[in-house]
Structures are given as structure tokens and as C-alpha cells.
Length: 66
Ligand code: SF4
Image (cartoon, helix red, strand yellow):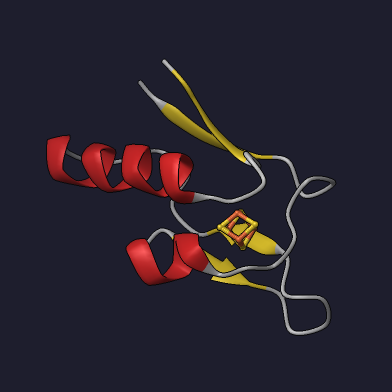
């Protein structure tokens, strides 16, 4: 099972991940740091969105553990 990992020490709160997949990602109210709502993509489409979010993140805060 693939898992989405988020390194909040790298996150700069850019919100690109939330724009890419609002079902899987959110940002905290204070600093805008990423919150992973759905760490385990449930199907291939969700996995593809997670991959795209990891690619698009400007601070490489997201990774996938396969
Ligand atoms: S795209 Fe990256 S830097 Fe921006 S909120 Fe998401 S994890 Fe943080």
C-alpha cells in the first residue's frame, strides 16, 4: 500500500498540493502547513493525483512510500 508522507519542516505553505487534490490535502489554519487528509491513496486515480502533488510541491515536502 502506497503512503503519502509529508515533511512539514520543509513545507512552505504554498498550497499547490491542496489545489492539486483537495480530497487528500489540507493546510493548517495557523501557518498553512500541509495536512494529509488521506495518506493512503485508495485507487490508481488517487495515486496519480498524489504523484502530481509531490512533483508540483515547490519545496519537495511530499513523497510517496511504495
Ligand atoms: S505544495 Fe508543498 S509546500 Fe505547498 S502546502 Fe503542499 S506540501 Fe506544503
